[in-house]
Length: 209
Image 1 (cartoon, rainbow, N blue to C red):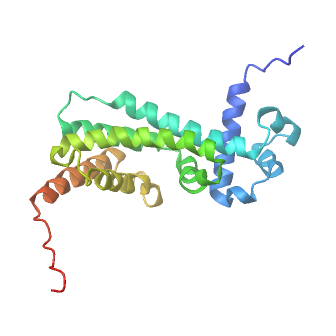
Image 2 (image 1 turned 180 degrees about the horizontal axis):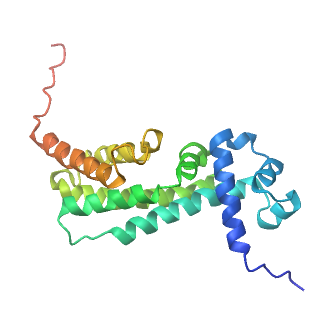
Image 3 (image 1 turned 120 degrees about the vertical axis):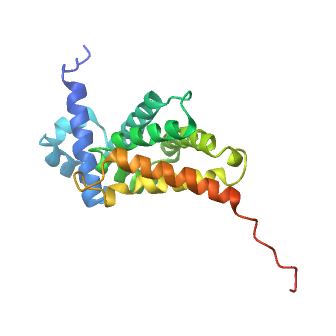
């Protein structure tokens, strides 16, 4: 007869993922054996294997769940009918709120996704691309002159550069809220994009000149 799952199976699995994310972020994935993960989670190694057969599965689920939660938060906050700048600000604030208490998971995503097998990387990168697509669409709304141009992608990735690394310096209660920072990033993107439109194309020197 098949073994039934405990009613708290999902809660325990989530606790394993959260603690593993902290371990990977603090000490590196390569240094985290299943024995060390079990110890950090306060379970036996045999019990850990009841939930995960190896640490690659744990790493994959840490990143997969993190990306799912980011996408869910951003999609729920998206209001295409709003004025473009308000829409982008709402998306930026939702993303920053989703990052709250997820510094370890975010660090693991950035630093360790490339350690997974190619097919697992492909699945996770598809989620990353969907997140980028949503923000690219919103940024094209505040800067319609960039839509369909080679500049839209670098402007979009500049947005992510500002929000993805905020965990290195952002401290709650230190004078700037997440909503404040979402507004700042939105204004930098919107006003900066207008500056790109106003800037003349650089002159090219003639060959041999």
